[in-house]
Each structure stands twice: as structure tokens, then as C-alpha cells.
Image 1 (cartoon, rainbow, N blue to C red):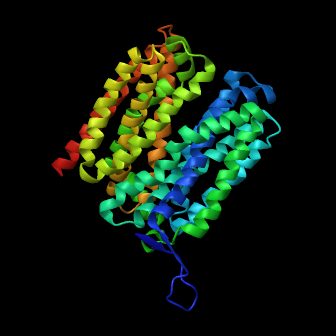
Image 2 (cartoon, helix red, strand yellow):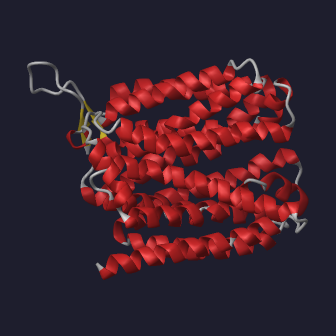
Image 3 (cartoon, rainbow, N blue to C red):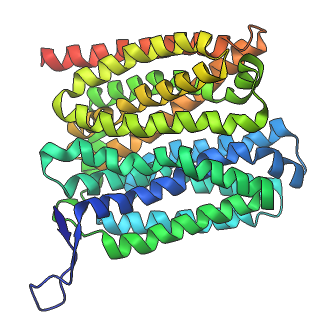
Length: 400
């Protein structure tokens, strides 16, 4: 398929056409910038802590500020931009990524840096939600889940390429260079979207009332609950992965980024496979992924004690977790047909709530002195909780 870009004034002849795959890849560029700025901050945290004169624990506030920005920004921007054409809104959001990451690189002190990280998080969920709606509008309905997976691809690739590269830049040229790199990716995204993504007729904006309607649907809240609980197990482990690997698997700190590459590869493959499975059996994909994810987390308790098995375990954590992503986002959009942008954006708010829940539980068991096996063990309970919530959602759906 090809997407026809805007026609020249006064003529029906298109200026040029772009393959739909290229348009979807262009939308995923923003995900690469977002994934890199979110996760690379963890890698350069010691650098900006030292440079801005705060302790490492205090510096973690900047990461929390970004996550808070995601949770707040996703619904607010989706509602505020409800009437905008999706392409126009994406360009504005990508431009915001350019501005706030560039200013993060120039932050003179810790307090303004924290404020800028909050602002940098605001476009995160709204970008993905808007890109999901536009990407779905570029393909026929039967291929929607695959399009949603393509839009998410940049976020998963960030864990393979973007985050290690930005972390290396931060260690080599100073932490500010990591945010300069993100700024460059976001700037390329702005230019590419303007040139290579069409104004799809089915994505010309809706209404504030339509978007708010999504919040009145119990199925939307149940699906968001399944995401918030189900993905929490990943972050119970991921938030403390460096000390887990160094203490349990006996690897040195320099090897940790290589092992994390297995997680990123798993996320990327799982996202692609999940997009195809969601087209055939969306509910089964979600249910099986949540059930298997709990087993994978239990297995990681033992796998984390050797570098090779730890790498396999990290791959499976990424693969199984992200395989449910396209089906869950598609489910949100189905139950919020009048407000798909808000629903799709809320997916990422729920994902960051999962981040907070998982990190809090993992930190609690470590603080209780239960050892580095405990985060994966307690994390295994969260997909089960997500499966219960999803079961309630499916039961309600069948009853009606």
C-alpha cells in the first residue's frame, strides 16, 4: 500500500505517494526519541547527579518527574487536541520533544532540570496515542493491529540501539550529550512527519465530548487496570536490573548494557509477533501473555544466577510482555470508538503506572532485606492480578 500525500492546490494529481510502511516507520521515529530519553536517563543519572550537585537517590526525582509528566500529559493533551488533525498534533508534540530535551541538555541546576523532565514527559503518551490513531487510519481495518505494532516499534528499538548509544555518549562526552542526541532524533522526526506522513481522511480530529466518552466506559477502565497490573512485574525487575545482574549473575557493570540488549530484542520481536496475533485472536493473546508472563518472572528468579540464562530470561521478559501490547491498545480503541486518541494515549499512562507499582514493590522487598531474588518473585504476582482484571473485562463483554 501507498499513502497519498496532500495534493497541489487546484489539481487532483498527488504531489507524490509514499509507501504506507514508510509512513508508519516515520511515526515510529518519535517512539525512538521517546524511548531513548525515558530510559537513557537511568543510565546517565550518576552523571547529572554529580554535575548538578545532588545525591543519586535525590537525582531519581528527575526520573519520577518524567513519569509523572507522562501520566498527566497523555489524557490532558489528548483532550485539548481532540479537534486537531492527527498529523498536525503529532508535529506539535514532536516539536515539544525537540524543545524540552534541548532545554534539558542546557539545564543550569537540578530544580529546573526536574521541571524540564516533567515537561519532556508530557508529549510521551499523547504522541503514541495520536500516532496510533493516524497509523491505524493508513491501513485497512484487518491490518490495524499490525499498524499499531509498527508505531510502537521505535520504542522497543530504543532499548536495543538508542539507550545504549545515549548512555555511551553520556559516559564519554558528559550526560548533556545524551539529551542532545534525543533532540536530534526528535528534530528528524518533525521533518520526516511533515514530508512523509499523509493527512489521512479518517484522522482529521474528533471532539472533546467524544474523547471524554471513553472515560465513561467500564471496559476502558478494566483494560487500563489490566495493563497497570500486568506490566508491573517487568518494572519490579527492570528497575533494579543492574544490582540483580551484578549480584546474582556475577557480571561486571560494563556487561549489564549488553545483557539489557536481550530485553530490547525481546520487546521488539514480541511487539511484531503480538501485532500479528492480535489480528487473529486478540483476547487469547492477552490472556496467554499475562499467564505466561507470571511463569517467566518465576523462572527468572533462577535464571538470574548465570549470565547466559539471565540473557535468555531478559529476552523472554521483553518478548512475552510486549506481545500483548498491540492487542491491549486495540481493545482500548475498540471500546472507546468516539475517543480513540484518549484511549490509546491512556495506554501509556497505565504503562507508567505499572512502572511505579513495579518499582515500588521491588524496592519494598529489597528494603525488607529479602534479597535480589525477591523483585522477580513479587513481580510474578502482578500479571496474575492483571489476568484477573482482564477476566472480569471479558466476562462483562460476553454478558452484554
